Image (cartoon, rainbow, N blue to C red; front, side, top):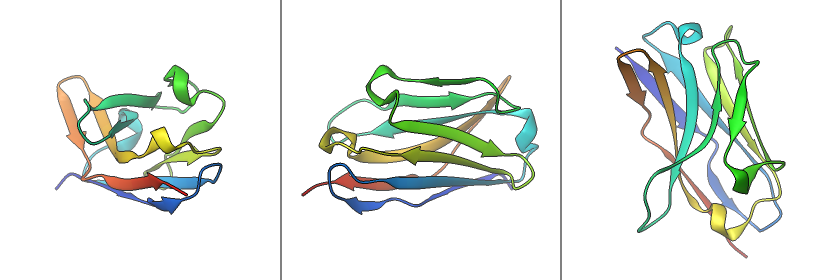
Length: 116
């Protein structure tokens, strides 16, 4: 059974940090490119960051460049998103996503709230 389980979300003040994790099981993790998406209330889901199968190819949306870092540990079947200098506009549910050819998997999401 394929599972993607996000964790690490929570409430943080502006300027703070959080580290999200996405634990994968039920598929060959190291054969999949991985993605972090987010969806704020009333908005479309948007791509935040992506990482290639080996972890050497990463990409970020402009609004998080220099603040967020995506990484993966294929030995642990886990992907991470280190989020620093958080802003109120980063508030959203964050989802991890795995893609390989015709296969697409989603996690259930973890809430990140940035508020003073």
